[in-house]
Image 1 (cartoon, one colour):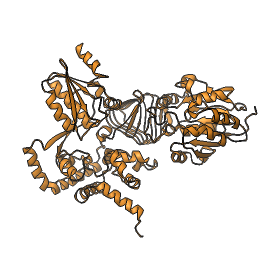
Image 2 (cartoon, rainbow over the protein chains, first blue to last red; image 1 turned 120 degrees about the vertical axis):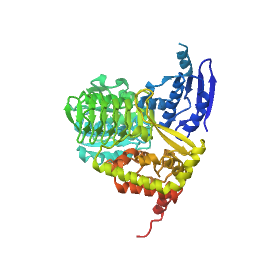
Image 3 (cartoon, rainbow over the protein chains, first blue to last red; image 1 turned 90 degrees about the vertical axis):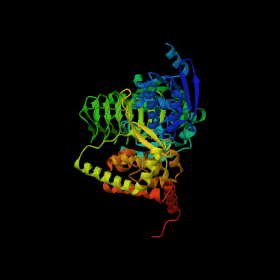
Image 4 (cartoon, each protein chain N blue to C red; image 1 turned 45 degrees about the vertical axis):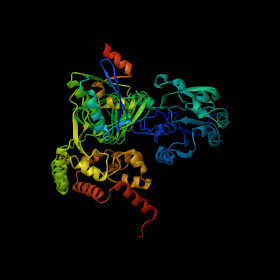
Length: 113
Length: 510
């Protein structure tokens, strides 16, 4: 079971999945949760501070999220990535696809610019 | 002080970076056993001591003594006598030193944390510290763990007043003279990466086990590089390395033996292998990669990736034999589908009617193109996924994806441990038994340190094994094991573990 906390800023929807691992065992539940929360909210900040491990299905979920949001002409940003997750994104070149910030404040500032 | 008479040395194997984020390999592999251009820092140190004229080396260590002894053996192959002494931990190193110090005169105290090449131009006196001749080569020469000439008396002072972790200050305090020598820090993962670049540029005098085919490009035997791959010096490839097309490798890359690099990879300032499979389109920079473990110098962090889709993307070259094997493979998949047809038809109808039963599972194939990152979508019934077991796996994952199996994706099947936790539950004897089987999952081989002389055993990635093993017998065996596991043994891994354990405890009569 995935717990997801949500903070609605003025224009940005900040979501924080409270799960250590985003992999094939819970990715469907993650997508179900996200599907409801990203509808009609084009700017999404995904805070991955609790996620320590991603596998390829977890990466698939991030790509799915990106496609969903960009189809609504929105933007996805990631923040507070743990080192192993950041390393994995870099190894598979997905750090070039996502905007990644060290903390939520920095990400919010980037939206304000 | 008396001149040096003996040709003895004490080599302390161990690094302060072991068990820390600065150690690039799994916890059970200390720095002195980390691959470095086809050897290890331990072997480099022994060779340097032999070149210095040392005939007898006493090795002192606490991490993986059996593996160290297996590498060094009696020392005959290096031209010296080596004896190994194990101690409980680094805190005992200096105390033990006084007991092990030869009583017939000064000896060289060496450490695997630093590679030095001192020259014996004159008789050395105890209390002489070797200082780096080329400070720029040492990452931080102030903290360099220098080698030195010591005697038993100085060792007692070290043991009484200092700790092994204070090596630089301890040695500096007991030594009164110094002599310069080429030095290279091997203290941690970052230092090892820096050392690779220095060694490949020939700025440090060591002999590499490879031919320099072009300036700065060292290749060992049986290296296969696709003509479209771009290699930049300095570069080293050990025996049996394969590099696929459109790769950009280098500078400062060392690839150890039996390593495969997939298509379109970009790799710089990295040490890879041995026995590693790198998937396609991966970016690896400033890292040490050992099988499924990636350590990044930039992040000073290590990550274990046991994801066959990311790690391996093997495509066998087209041949008649492989085409025929592929046809047979599909025939076997068809056989499986026919066997499962009585279940597949109602489940498919049910999944059409009930949206909650059917869920997509996207697995990513990494690629650089924005928004075109290809995903392979598998269907899951009953919340099954590649890691589930028994009936749930067969009905919930294999059955809805039988099309994939028909297309040759045999890695969808599997009846072996799929996580480190599951693996750790197995008895050691069963882990050993599994590791000798050709269809093993990667983690088993990582953890067992498979014999490097056996190429078959040391192949580490499930996909690679799947791609490689196109024999009908292998496929039939896989299908048979899978069906038997699902239909007859709901918990095949644990059942086999119990059986192996029982066999070990109560061996059957001849």
